[in-house]
Length: 127
Image (cartoon, rainbow, N blue to C red):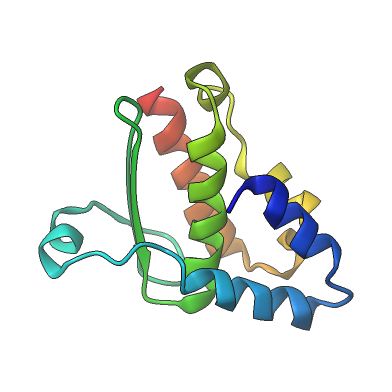
């Protein structure tokens, strides 16, 4: 799946409920982590849900997990976007415009957005 596919799928959604269902479907595609992998991941604090995230530029590696299916769907979108970015693009990566374009942002709580902002900072710092 590509980011273009994501944009197309979300463009076909007529309501927040359809977007929510799509996020839940995407959550099922987030790569599963073993208990050992999860234990080794840094937890991001300040998010409504429990959230773990690690990012490495070269070789490109993204490990992410949340205990909330909605966040897992959001993490899957972030993962796809990050895999498609060049190293130079990663240094300028902004999460909120991505979710604005998908018409998701206004439905997210400030604490979920805070967790996503921290992911953005992790990616920029790694680039």
